[in-house]
Length: 269
Image 1 (cartoon, one colour):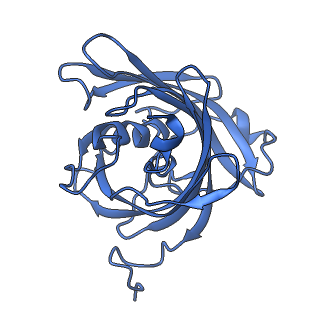
Image 2: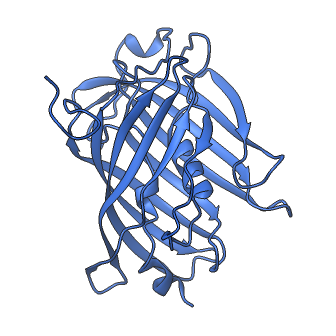
């Protein structure tokens, strides 16, 4: 089966950008003075915070011989903030379309899933696969995509150019570790406000033979709560169930921010 046929049933791009408040970058110039200062990167999760995001992914076969454009929206809700600072995020895909070269056509989105991150941003749990889940991407691989744009924060202040590395258990291959390497690039001006800029690379084995999946991501973070305000990713060797590894380039933008609502969608008092 061709990649084009596969992508009619895939919602690849909706798996990117966890607790993000995401919008298109319009101004990424370095700020004056603030960019050279030490900063303490931190998350401030709030239960019920909700965003809807739109992601456009240019999906390619491993050899680059075939490409389709997949566009989708997904709602992400902070479902629970635990006493230890860890957070449960639910991801519910919405509309989706695929463009095989003759214009976008609607297609079915994949089922929802959930992920849990610790207070530093490490992936610690993946939601169970639903019985009716026919997506060619297993939840464990989807969770790695979420982790690739959810920056793991250092436990100490950083200045521009500082790097750090972290690991967590690989949900795809038992006994293996996922490696994340991060660099703080300083403050950038993003849509009129200062944002932390972090470059993050994720490397993970996808099988016992040593096949490696890599994701390189640029993330702009809101200093007020650590949420992502922009993410752009380049991915190689995402495993699928029946169609071999695929790659893509993607960018995510904000559709709606409903952070003033409860987790069930009702307005906060």
